[in-house]
Image 1 (tube, one colour):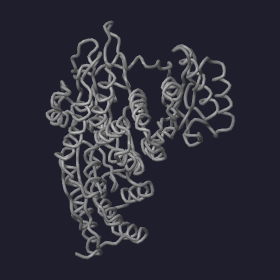
Image 2: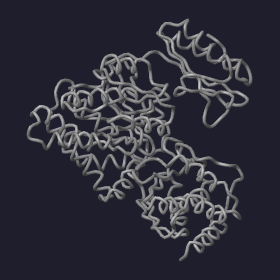
Image 3: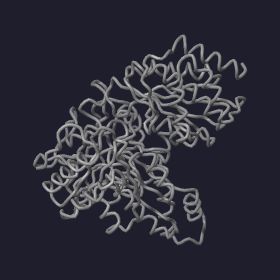
Image 4: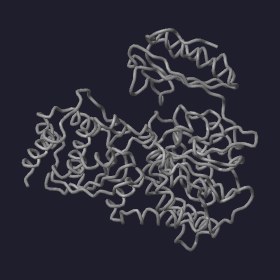
Amino acid sequence: MGPSNCFIEAAQVGRNKFARKVDKDVHYGTAGFREKAEVLDHIIYRMGLLAVLRAKHKNATIGLMITASHNPEPDNGVKLIDPRGEMLEASWEKIASKLANASDDDLETVLNDIVSSENIDMSNEGSVFIGRDTRPSSPRLAAAAVSGVTAMCGRAQDYAVVTTPMLHFFVACRNAGAEATEGAYRAKLSAAFNKLCARVKPSGHYKPHVVFDGANGVGALKMKELAGYLSNNLTVDIHNEGSGKLNHMCGADYVKVQQRAPEGVPASPGARCVSVDGDADRLVYFFTGEDGAFHLLDGDRIATLVAGYLMELVRASGLAINLGLVQTAYANGGSTHYIADVLKVPVACAKTGVKFLHEKALEFDIGVYFEANGHGTVIASEKTSRLIKDAISKAEVPPGQRAAAEQLADVFDVINQTVGDALSDLLLVETILRSKGWDARDWLGTYADLPNRQLKVTVQDRRVVQTTDAERVCVSPEGLQSKIDELVAKFERGRAFVRPSGTEDVVRVYAEADSQRSADRLAALVAAAVHQVAGGVGDAPAVP
């Protein structure tokens, strides 16, 4: 079937089976499209069309993942995955939004415009990998995606229920000429983890056991499969396996935001517990003390643990590798001080959003990035991979340095470098804790978080607030940043910043200080300043 016939068929199928259900415009963001599931059919059908065009444009396999991650079960969403397993190129986010918002009658015209403007060779194969989470709406929406791929003369491979990171992995493998299967994924992670465990026997306070909260999602299913390959180097007690509602009072986002243990996870005091989110790309640790107090080990904690461990191996290997940790302005000041001043690891700051962290991490030979919500990974450059390989193969390299290089190679086989992966990150964290002989209390004791508070202020138009320096400095409206600086100077170890929400007319406020009372007061004062200067709606925030 020729290209023009593809466009005609795509438009006809779109009008007849996947007509627009709502007039509201939608916009492709870091998380792709997310809406209530009942209004997504036409959007996901069109993303099937777009995935084929992207695949033909890059002459490579593209991924299409149906998930709403940590959102409630009635929601769903879709995001595209580029050839190396990375997120969709930013310029194509606008194309995705244009296609999603086109009228049914304009669909053929918009498709032709995309092909023309992007100079797409329609004779290339349009290979698309499709995956979905466990939501009740996901099978129906996956079928819509397959319809879109087929209508655009592409070829769909449906992996059915998989984690988001697994689909990223499959796409990267296919385009690199490697095996793109669940078996290959499990084999890569488990083999490297078992090799690392063979180097170090459990010691100190470390016990090779975790209590796992699967958020009633795909993470529980895939963890159960992976656990069978870990050769008793780690036992996993899995809860919230799917009998309850997805992400309801459980999962990484619930634990992080509510600062409490998830429902349905019985754990004795001190037991090391983990929570993943609905599509298993986020991971947080937690435990309950003997006094019943809840203790969270979030993405900041994971980042410092990983960066410190990798820096030890890099130094032991003697390799000329530039390692850095990337944080956002939301990273706790306690973690930044610890990693920069104690562990001596360079720290960079990026705008909020995992795609900005990923881009910044690429500036290092080894870039570590984690958002506080538990989404993150480690990226190694081609130069780093080459240096490690050479150190292992060359006879003149001293044994100690060679051993460190071998360990680095195994560590990077545990890591899913394409995207944050809760299962991969769990094995990485367990590797490090095992090597140090630490339990969760030891890990928590490495540094103290500064007390902090987050607030939001409703405004008439969030666009009046503009920031720079990775969102740490407010440049508009005039006078707001000077007011923030003046307030911060009054508090011991004070720090505060504001940034506009990406989805609603609110301005988000973050503040930290040497005590919780001071952090609460600083946050409230900054919020009041935002309300006064940036067009606040309703009553001004109360200052304690």
